Amino acid sequence: MLTVDFTRFPLAPGDRVLDLGCGAGRHAFECYRRGAQVVALDRNGEEIREVAKWFAAMKEAGEAPAGATATAMEGDALNLPFPDESFDVVIISEVMEHIPDDKGVLAEMVRVLKPGGRIAVTVPRYGPEKVCWTLSDAYHEVEGGHIRIYKADELLAKMRESGLKPYGTHHAHGLHSPYWWLKCAFGVDNDKALPVRAYHKLLVWDIMKKPLATKLAEQALNPLIGKSFVAYATKPHLPRAAAAPATAPVDAKAGA
Image: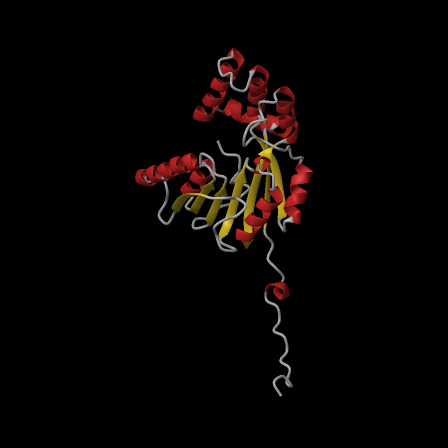
C-alpha cells in the first residue's frame, strides 16, 4: 500500500533514493523494483533486519532490474550518516508527526538531497487525524506515538522555510480513515470488535484484489477523508554566484 504516487513523483533507474524512517519498507521496495539505488533507514533495528531480508528475497526472485541496489541500515533522522548532496530522491512517509524536532529533520533531508533533487513528505491529514485523537487518547498517547497534527499550510510553510520548493499535493487512503475511526471508537487494541474485523477484511481484499469498485471509491473519498496528506517538492539549484563565489582579488601590495 503506497502513499507516494509515483506518477506524480517520477523515479528514474539509477536514482539514488533515501527512504527515511522506512518502517516495513513499502516505498523502499517499490523504488528497488523501479531500478533505483535505495537506502532504507530507520531507528528500529528489528524492522531494518526484516527489510534487509525482503531486499535479499527480491534480488533472489529477480524482482529488481539490473543495476538496482538496496541497503537497509539503522540510523538517526536528525544525524544522517551521509555526505551533503548524496541523494537524488528522499522519501519520508508517516514519520514527521512522531519527531519533536521536525525542522531539524527537514534540514537534514535538504542537506543530503542534491540540488534539483526531489522529496516526498507524507503525514496524517488534519481532519481524519483529529477525529482519531478525539475518539481515543490511546491512539496517540503512546511511546513513539503521534505528537502533532499538521495542517497542510503549516507543513508546506516548514518545507519552504527549509529551502524546498513544493510543486504538488494530494490526499491518499480515503478508505482507511473509517477503519481507524472504528479502531479508536472500539479500542485501538481491540481487533475482535465485529465492525473492526469486517472493515479490516474489506481493506485486505482491496489490497490483494485491487477491484475497480474500491479503486473508484477511494478516488472519490480521497479529497474528502483521505487519511494521508502528501506533498512533493524540489531542492532548487543555487544561483551561480551563490554556488561558486568569485575569488577575492589579489592585493598586489600583499607581502611587499
